[in-house]
Amino acid sequence: MDRDKILLTPGPLTTTLRTKLAMLRDWGSWDADFNAVTARVRQSLLKIIHGEDSHVVVPLQGSGTFSVEAAVATVVPRDGHVLVLDNGAYCKRAARLTTLMGRRCTVLDFDEAAPVDAAALEAALKADASISHVVLIHCETGAGVHNPLQAVADVCEQHGKGLIVDAMSSFAALPIDARAVRFDALVAASGKCLEGVPGMGFVFLRKAILDGCAGRSQSLAMDLHDQYVYMEKTGQWRFTPPTHVVVALAEAIAQFEEEGGQPARLARYTRNYQTLVHGMARLGFMPFLDPSVQAPIIVTFHAPGDARYDFKAFYAAARARGFLLYPGKLTQVETFRVGCIGAIGSDEMEQAVHAVALALEDMGIASGEPAI
Image (cartoon, rainbow, N blue to C red; front, top):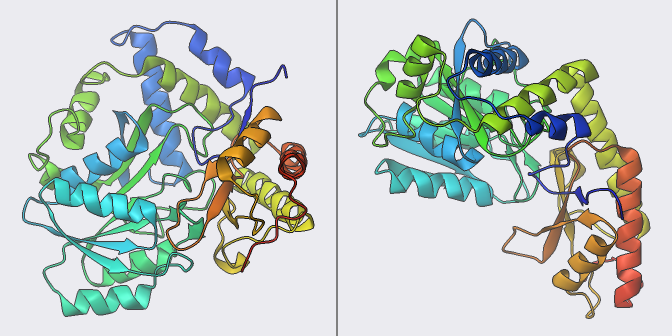
């Protein structure tokens, strides 16, 4: 097969040739041309959430999790108390990193097949006045649940609590408007729905809290306040930037804007999702989530009930046909996941369904119908 394998994962994603070609040039990290690219990327990111008046954006080296950790450490005081709304694996990761940084952390548990509930959040805030900040995963890709950002943000604002949003797999696809949704920090990354390559996160920080963030982080490299101040003063990154990742992201953003921005990207991903679930249904597969709570980002499917099913063999058979699937992230039932995002369309999703059908044939499995 001549083409690269299609990545049906929550990131890294399949990228366009234009994005790949942008990485073929070397850049000086202090050079004016590279500084101009960084500035352009930052301005473009703010426009996506209409945050030019209310927020700044701070890029950071590393995967998206680096930026989630940096956001918590920069925004939450050392004596702060974080409430994590937990309905999946990435929520649990947020709770763990909060605890590891020495911040007090409480977890409010929800079912991994359901969204978090704003009413339960309100009750928790009323019951414990010491909570200073709330962490929400906008799209919990452990199962694929779309969590209610607006409702959670409204409760936090009413109670005067800070809100940190992990929008890793939703940013640039699901609508987020900083003029309507109040958050102290919102975190995303280059290798997700903007369809850049991995290696850089970015955090939107509310201007009103910026000054208070000075000196809060216990990390040198991950202090977003210091990164912001230095970047504003010099136009440069404090430490060696991921130059090729930044220029690839600039190119990916140009394509995002040409496509029609967030509404167009959501429409394409929604078509991908619909093509996928309809095709997989023909093979007997059942999604784990109710469609009403499913984000069109990544779909969790129940594993086939056939005793011959083995994920590693299934993965290998799909891979041989050019498609990389993703293992399940749930504890209660066996599943696997298929992403709908990246530089792909419904044609690729149809091909993926065909690859799955052939994988079942290889394994002697007549149907993807689950055991339940």
